[in-house]
Length: 196
Image 1 (cartoon, rainbow, N blue to C red):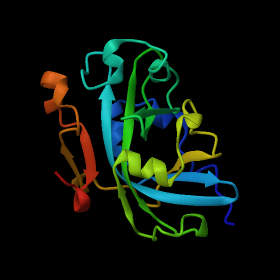
Image 2: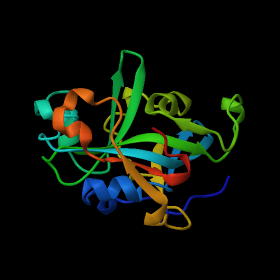
Image 3: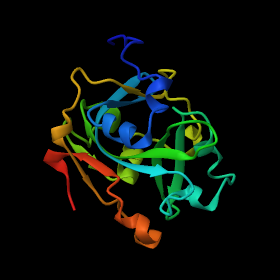
């Protein structure tokens, strides 16, 4: 198995930047999941930003709760929650402590195929946070996980940075309840796969 370099693992300073920047800079990076001795690599193709208590689409709009306390913590940790009682969603905490902000990972493109998950094929796109979490076996056991350690779940830099021209922005999905915040163009994707 190829040994990963610590230089390729994204460190904490990256996540401490403004959330909108992190949401775009994560595109093209690789989300890595280690399950036993097997490693799955998925290129991040779609993200959504959630920023502060004033963002009515964010869980933090209701303030600090047992559920959202991770968002108020140190950048670079995973915020994993369940929706509809059946789907998990993976977020990356951003910015500074006590300011609740995070980036939802909405889509990835699988780089390799593993016998453990043989029904999926290399190059397949997993669009939707629930689908990718199910495929990567991400659940609330990883809530609060430090993504900078290079174990179980982490993010690596791409060989080449994605050009800003290849990124498109749109409205976030499923936030019609968020009044004026539903119009924010805080959903980002690689242009060749951006959908409605």
